[in-house]
Amino acid sequence: MAKKLNALANGFTPQTVEFPSGDGTVVAHLYLPKDHDASKRYSAVAVGGSFSSVKEQMSGIYAGEMARRGVIGLAIDYRNYGQSSGAVRQYEDPKSKADDLSAALRFLSSRSDVSGAGLLGVCTSGTTVIEAAANDPEVGAVATVAGMFVEPGTIPHGDRRRAEGRAAREKYEKTGIVDMIPAYHPYSRRAVNTVPMPYYLSAKRGNVSAWRNEFAVMAWADMLSADAVSNASKVTAPTLMVHSKMASYPGQARKVYEGLAGPKELYWGKGQHFSFYDHPGQVRATADRVAAHFKSTLS
Image (cartoon, rainbow, N blue to C red; front, side, top):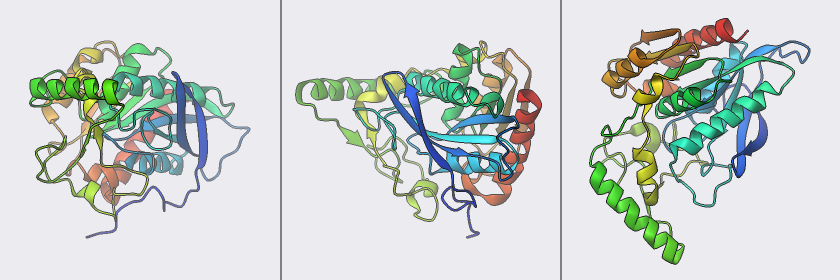
């Protein structure tokens, strides 16, 4: 297997930063271009990764690739994940995540070396950046990569999972115990995702020490409420969507693209979904296009 990209060994030593969001704190890795000059101003982008991911995975890879192309990159741990705050860990809340992206945008915009700030979402963060851009007029530009664009009914077994979520919440309120299930497993029917997902199960790829393969069951209702398709009609920021026919739900990507209200481009790349996470050729070609988008819209 060809060597994959790695956020922890990409030639950069990111700065660890933190900033407030909601009632908590977001921790992130800030990637500055190699020739960074504090007296100059750069396009900047906050990057969110896939479901359950942390900044040391694909979001860190893309933040580093942005910096390599002269764009300041900020890979975040959403609240409830990684180093960020959150009393209930591994709690998937799309609205909270959208708030975290807006907080990241404010952090970047407050810097004197930033000319404009945008959002980049990989996989499920495609849905999240659409929600953030739909509700935050300060989002200067948006890009999605292999977006998992959810709307009610996209995730199967919704009624059963909502019932499981209610039961788990009642248990938590009575006992303080948080029921967890695997986020990814190749065959367990209890897991959120049961198709083969070698990225997350390989220590050479996404199975980094900072990541936990868990999902708080009581979050089902929040997770199932996400609606990228409805939110798309409220997004006026220039948006680039990079997808492929072998990436997650290409039909959903078309629906979101058709609904976007501002300048937009849907670019159909090649390769499987997880190749967009860390395959060198796929990521670099995608990063070229994404960085050009942000430079042209945020400078």
